[in-house]
Amino acid sequence: MKIAIAHYYWDYPESEHGLPSALVRRGNQVILTVWCGDGGAGRTYETNGFRVHLLPGFNVVSGLGILNLKNPYVSGIGRIYDAFSPDIIDCQSHLFVTTLESLREAKKRGLPSVITVRGVMAKRDLVVNSAQKLYLYTLASRAFKEATLVRCLTRSDAAEVARYGCPQEKIRVIPNFVDTEAFRPSGEEGDHILWYGRFVEEKGVANLVEAGQSVIEKDPSASFILAGDGPLRDEVASMVAQRGLAKSFSMPGKVDRAGLLPLLREASIVVLPSLKEGMPFSLLEAMSSGKAVVASDIPGINDVVVDGETALLVPPCDPRSLAGAMISLRRDPSFRERLGAAARRSVLERFSEGAVVGRVEALYKEARGLTK
Image (tube, rainbow, N blue to C red; front, top):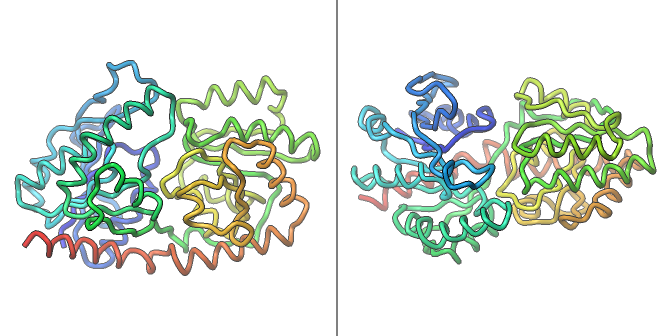
């Protein structure tokens, strides 16, 4: 098959290379289109057997006064499809204008299309949440009806998109997967507690700092690494400084895979204090690496793990419970080891390339059959 994958923008490009690479290994031809962001418009490059097209465009919400939100419109995507002649177009996330553009191009060419739902909505402030709900009830609802099939990563997301007008008969639940060879147990364990990702409200990093202060008060040797970038990074750094925690919290900035792997290898605990998730790669990567995880008990996370068996789950926005879970794991190395080993087994069974990619390919074939 010739598969076109339409992205919006990338914060961590390497995390988006997994699916196209796996599809190429199965004998497919793949291209990715993505907004170029701050530069590189018109550039193309090849990696892992597929081609990436960086498209010019602009952020359609930049003039609306909505802080920390990007939703790009791109130009030239039709020319890319004309040259590639795809058999199917996979639109990444219903929340972005790039999906609406790609669905229009698919309809124009009589091509099947898939929308991949990567979390139904982000949890931000009142203005952004209201804007997202308006979009979901209008443009996204229409997009769900126009797409041939809709892939949700979790059953909870499947139920939620149905409430926003996605026809039940179009929904298929197929999770993310992780590179279990790159992210594998190393036999190493340092002493730090690790969080990594984007510094945005829905990741709950402020709650982690508050919980971390409680951990340090009981265990002054505890140390934390917060790796990543994003609009709230400076705010979190100020919070760390104001609480006098600078010696115990390291914030190395954005890290690529080469930088992430040693951080994971040396971590004793990985924490995801999120308020809202789709199916986070960071969770699957930590589990695949055999690490003990403490995470919020929310959809997108509790779809993946079992509390007390493959991770410890705590209520979201509850720094006290979060601190208690971290303290209990720090005090019990054998429990950490058991959780990490069970997490690794779960990933190999349910979230490995072999367990997932064939199902995605079958989804594409089903969509093609429905358009004939």
